[in-house]
Image (cartoon, rainbow, N blue to C red; front, side):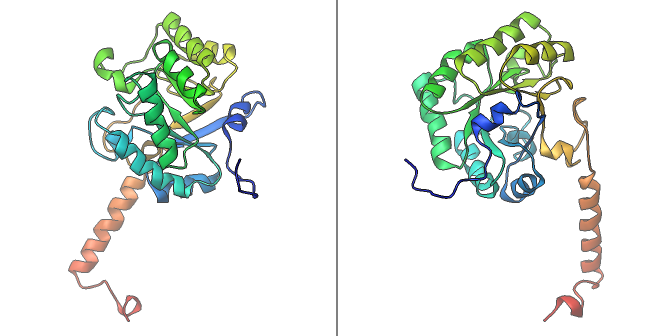
Length: 268
């Protein structure tokens, strides 16, 4: 029994899951550090994911595969200190959920014990049903992930739209039956995502899966225009912070070189 008398304002897993039945569209974004997580949380986003996408956007790798469990936990600790309202979910990095049910429980348990996360996310559907069931039975809420699975990029042969409706429906049904409370649908045709969303009782969170999903998620660096190079088709860039930061840093360097900064105003 908890000794805390004050009720937390954080969105709970049941509240998050119930948004679908209430007809509320769900907003999710990724975060990897305290400062950004605090901003997102104060903006009213429903869910924050500490994604293994950090392998690419924070660490500079060309896939999500290299990021480790320890690194995910390190970043989730930072994010967890900032989040007071949103549901906080943490990705299980490759291959932490592929080592058997008991090891998966141990790995997910480490994430929850070391951070303020309320749930884990893992890639997979029918092939991960036993693991999802085991985690949920251990009291660990699971967000599933169906469609394009970046951790399986070598097997899939690249970042491609997944179009096999039978496989996608089977994966979605299996993950829900195993006890997942929500599900990310990544890079699948809008019509298939709509069918899955209609059939499932749990919320679907789309990324490149059309407007009929119960919610949406984007990588924060993509949304803010911090990403260098070509953006995926499913991304909408809401700002161009890369240009703004570039201008600011260049102006700073120029003022330092010319002796313009600091002035008396910035001196003691």
